[in-house]
Length: 335
Image (spheres, rainbow, N blue to C red):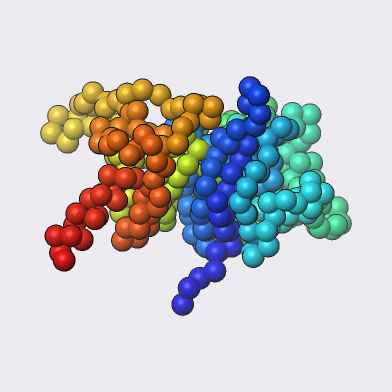
């Protein structure tokens, strides 16, 4: 039986202001996320992953817009919705947490005031009931003595504590989808693991879908069910996490994996990190071919001229001419 996704995106394009006219910074992105599933969207800074996340939550900045495609939440296309309509969806159907918890919280309001505001935005409940619910939310995100945290101000909390508060606010109205945009960037390694473990635990408890945005493939290996790798505004590989991390197909994905810091098991020393030569092209610099062509060790003439189409692999898709050619040779050998 096929499980219907709670979030379905098809051919998403996002336009940003250019020198003379808008240009698509994100183009042709497809993704599905089912209830209780974690999809990690991974890529370098500037690849379009955060823009994609903002589009999914209806939070694109002024001057940036969805220029094509559909975004369906529970079967309803929301790509062209007004801000008024989005306000009804955010927090209720879909919520988002951000990488900088200090800037996401109001410094002059207590944590309790901000949680109460998040709850009452969608449910007009009484003062005593909403306070009790706020205390329970802080307890759920593993903040001890939640009554004390309700009276605290953001500057009185550590970065990890503030991120837990944001998670509590994000799940206050039991959303179907939670988007976490680089939720552990400013935190140390131990706190990073705690936050990701908390998100995974809440996902399992509530059945919500989780979209995790990160530049760090090492972080998602334990938590993601599927991974979509983005480069220069496009998806280049989308597969089950175990397969992608164990046998990546796209040259860019393999380069990202090779660039991860790892210790040698025999000496415990860190080898010199592999580099990906060159840089990511800007939206204005992208041509008709593969955007990774100028950095790829397997580039062919058609890579520079024709944008690759999706190649179906065992448990996902890869956008690469070299993979397509390899599959064609394999099929020919079997014929």
